[in-house]
Length: 184
Image 1: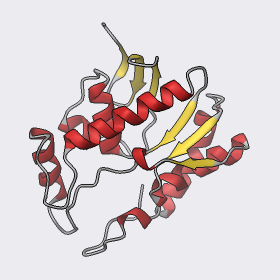
Image 2: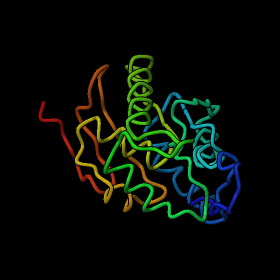
Image 3: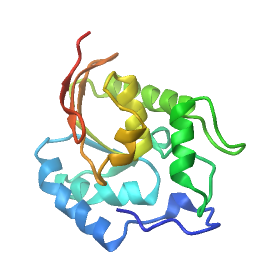
Image 4: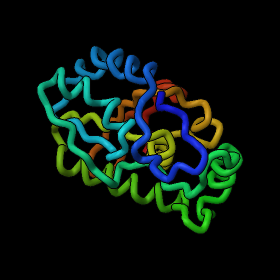
């Protein structure tokens, strides 16, 4: 759980985890280290890095920053009604604020990042520290039954296990999805 955003703070990418979030990151270590990952990748946003750092340390790995797995660049500032803003973006994936990124763009970025990671690490388990909107849009593209209600109810933090080949997902499991398998 990150520290809540502050009105007129342009440095959202520097927002850290709260004390609860730091404890939650430590609590994730047993579950995440059980995967035996060979790499730990993260969004460059401070809160994403802080979420995976304890696991990387336990695995003896460095956190590798990847901008394409960064947060949706929504373009709104607190105290804007972010829920309304997000629902509008879900309803129309081509809509954005003048300074924001569309959901179509974040989906494209997420998909390209996942495909590149799958191609680069086809036989390895990789842990990715990212954000709820990025994850939801990636899951949607992979065929999982995801919508705005799914995104809004996603727990923080959440672990989604995705097994994929170079072009598609065969298996996804995690909160709100149960044990989803591709029908393709």
